[in-house]
Image (cartoon, rainbow, N blue to C red; front, side, top):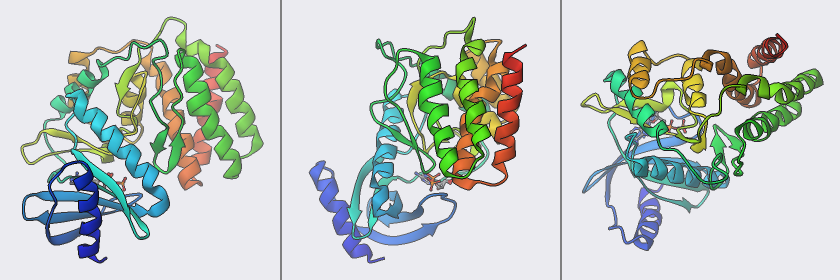
Length: 299
Ligand code: ADP
């Protein structure tokens, strides 16, 4: 990487936003990103986190910038401040604040922060969705606005992933049973009408950590307005959040007693996405989940 040339590209973009130029002193490659390469940039003023992706992934980085901005503006979760996105030769880039991270900290506060964010409710006539499509991992996440949560969850979340699963080689029986499940969705919402909460959207433990003071930090969001139970269900899918996290959450925003029934329904979206992205072992989990949910809806 020619850092002098890249910093010129960063500074052209920063100048368009009336932000002072940065002067890179040294760079440090970071590990851990699933979809990008990342660097810590030491500059004469502060440290930055730079994500690099192939050029065609610029829309992903732009969506991430918009999502981080939305969370920063919500004044509830603490996230890295995004500064700019742009391109340089065959790369797309996203420049944001660097926050030194650690894995342990105040998990009760992490739950409270999430609950405070979920209290931010969209009251527009079509409250469910987001102003643009964004990405869940490398998959497109469809966000066209809707007034009806059941319709939104069926048509914008489950259906596109089911369609993609056919291109990825899942049996057509999976698609057929998935369509039946979409028809059966009202079963889970007989006495439950969720508000359109601001969501993180990709809340697994790898997308949250703590700063050096132990305060919670969230990153890599896939924001939209939807049922807050979807964030909680995802947080439970791969574990990683302690009981203190959930206690903190419930203290601020108690959850509906039907959550345990809806949890597998909401986890299914992410399982389908994992099958579509990583294949193999997730197929059986998806099939079992749909079968169990369908059987339950007939009780
Ligand atoms: P990817 O989209 O490639 O998975 P992430 O946004 O999850 O990338 O970031 C990869 C890793 O980099 C994270 O697991 C986290 O440890 C670290 N990280 C992310 N954002 C920052 C930041 N602003 N400052 C410091 N470290 C960060």
